[in-house]
Amino acid sequence: MALQMRVLPVTPFKQNTALLWDDVTAEAVLTDAGGEAERLLAAVADKGLNLQAIWLTHGHLDHAGGVVDLCQKRPVPVLGPHKEDAYLLADLPQITAQYHFPVSPAFKPDRWLADGDVLHVGSHAFKVMHVPGHTPGHIVFYNAEHKLLIAGDVLFRHSIGRTDFPRGNHAQLLEGIRTKLLTLPDNTRVLPGHGPMTTIGEEKQHNPYL
Ligand SMILES: [Zn+2]
Ligand SMILES: [Zn+2]
Image (cartoon, rainbow, N blue to C red; front, side, top):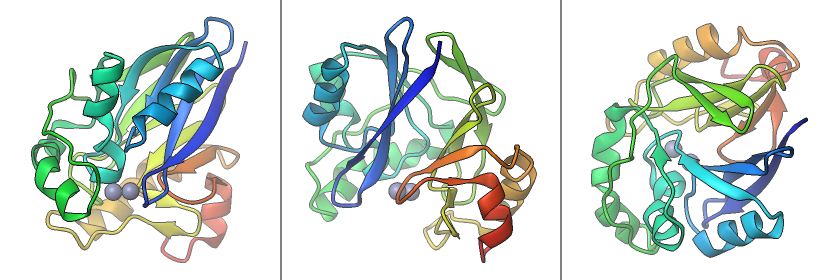
């Protein structure tokens, strides 16, 4: 009875989409379906999984730009981000065109998420934590049983999220990382939105921004 994960980098920004699944029930979730919907659905089919939902950490184009395309091919509920990121999802047509991504329509998720919400992949629970600063509505997903954190663009290996966007807030981001993420067990595995995986212990010791 295990929670499984395969990381699928998508878009020119190499955004880490996670395919998470319960290997007993074959129920699966995709996080941050930023693009390349066909490839993501092929990975789901390849393992014979039953896709249940898309979870979004925040509204940036490389994390949310493939959602409408994917849902047209395979209708599933979209959960998250926090509603403070609604303006980013509303801006997707302009921003995807500006960055020469396939143009995404604007959309609203089926459900906005808030701090303390709990989501499931089969029998495995993930707690939602609101960690604003990179964007105002950024959330992360934490599974305590397997000590796995889907961190989006909050925390990277030896780095942290950019806060130089409109509505970015560096002090708020640091506060959220310190109080909500660095308090997790040191051996928590962290999947950032970009780049290699890390652990909470590694970042406590060697992240120059913390
Ligand atoms: Zn971002
Ligand atoms: Zn990103």
